[in-house]
Length: 84
Image 1 (cartoon, rainbow, N blue to C red):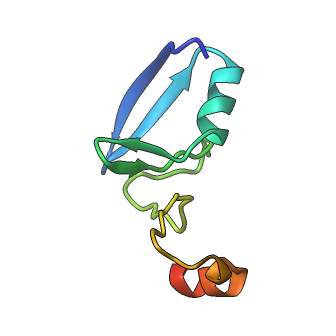
Image 2: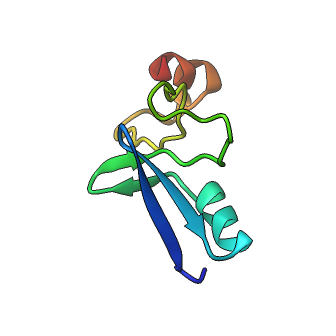
């Protein structure tokens, strides 16, 4: 990753980031989730119809730690109930 990019503050806590290479953009989109100062950063590919004054984030990818959870509880059904 070359780490060269530019950032534009759109408004409402949205930012447009332009990467120097396609590989850097791919890395940012696929290697998350990302956090900045303890807050999750939602990353998505640019959409020309995006409106920072009206768009809402419908879902995110997040890592959670379930300390002390018994191993037999690591089942899709149980994890979905916790997630919901």
